[in-house]
Image 1 (cartoon, rainbow, N blue to C red):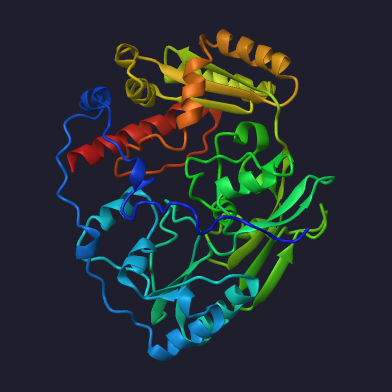
Image 2: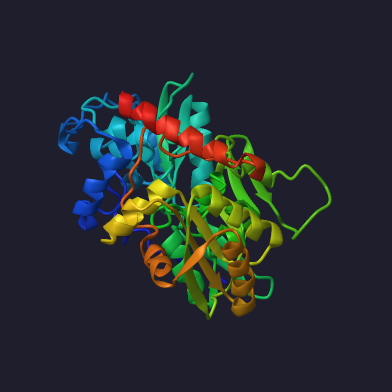
Length: 427
């Protein structure tokens, strides 16, 4: 199969200083505005953010010879030192990133390069290494761990390597259930291209609309369907990587007893060891059936116990998500259920796809009910599923926190998050 083009030039760009599509921005519902002070306490009104046109950047540190050399690799139209382009590539979407975007004086890459294939990526790395220029791989711009910060380190300049031109379905093996996707393919593009052949990837992080397949791999992404299909790193069977010292094509065979597995070195590396240009992933036929069910629990602890039972008995939901009391209240208030929002309690969303749904749902329901859960039917779960990647994001200074805790210590992450939020309010 020849490469099939994605739609890299047709998508609506994300806001330069926030999440989401600016055309779809709308105020928080009044019910949520009334509820937030009850949950977070009084929050100071922030200062007026800088307008894009007023942002001040230092002049590019690249010489005209540097720029001409990069233009010789990717073409004049794919090298930019325009302030707006540099600002769009100045960082990710964590709370510290977005607070930085509110300032007038900001730091940004000295230029943005847009290679169109693996060979151009490799040539850019060769040029950068020879000229002492740091390179930041850039996919959808949704990083929340500082991976896109324009840090020069010991180098004299830094450039952003925008991979969105590397977009499309490179190949599909329907018998093996494997597909090769170009690293700059976004989540929606990947699903649309695979759906044409009756397959899907089934990976839906909250950043799904903008994040890229290469970003999924570099961040070891986890999504709402990970309970059923696994984290993204478990889907990956091979990668192609360009590095300053050569190319790597890993995962040519479906499995090996030899170690160490170099694929795992690059998964979660956030681009520091090389630039991922292609990703081979496991795919599966598009499920014909999907069933939703929402549950309520008297407390986060009770809900956590229910999820532990489900995980340890492998009862089989494709999606199972537990929201604590605060998140549950805000979610209910968004859809006008302020009465329920003011009541204490946690919530669980379950979704079942594929075969054997009735049996899997019955086993899961029995375990959740035994832990104190009460089914509230399909409605709330279906509402959550429709808005999972477009709902408003309310963050504190702690932004994204990832925890891995044993069931015996499941209350510790909640205490840490609450303490972080409390410190943020005091600042």
